[in-house]
Image (cartoon, rainbow, N blue to C red; front, side, top):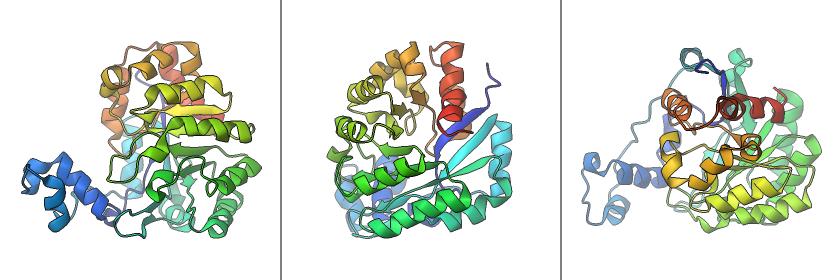
Length: 301
């Protein structure tokens, strides 16, 4: 089973270190690596706000080298998201990738790298036009949105135009559920808000991303209840799932969850994520479906 050609549905532009330099990521980095940041552990948040730690040590990669990693670690395809992300501190977009920019970086590897378009609820008409063009000009198969950074609930009325457009175009829409790891509002990611979306858009495929933690059971509930709702395991190292996400592990151990769960790395390591996922106490069939087959079906790959 080690030769499963995995499909990573959640990855970000790998060529631009500037995307990680916003205040939210500096604080996240200082929190995660505070012993190396030269900051006090007594009040690391205030220390970081007063004196930014500088550039995050995020590695970059060329498209050719990135695809070489796919071959080395046995991945078939990876989705690269042209994410729109709003800063709670600066009140401006800190991630604002366009479809054209992402296409220019992956165009020589379209057989391996897929584009995911995104959405800015503060620029609705402009964003809808980009989603439409992404699908019709570039063949984009997925839209991923981040309502939390805009301090919106998943079912906020400013998100509905995006859901309607994706339903019209016949592409799945994914959304961050659960808490925000960065210092961004988290309450809007409560997975039960997906209930209304699924009822209002029964023809739309919806993916609740990042496991919904700490409301894992609520996300499992939504994926179990609604035929058009799925979940993914991205943003959490797979080795952490058994202890921190027991409800999701139970869900993935029988047919309902095996058919409703997808795999993503969240740009946190192709090698480690796949190796750790293969070590989980899941059947060979479950691993095959979650790592690959469900994505092939949902995105018509």
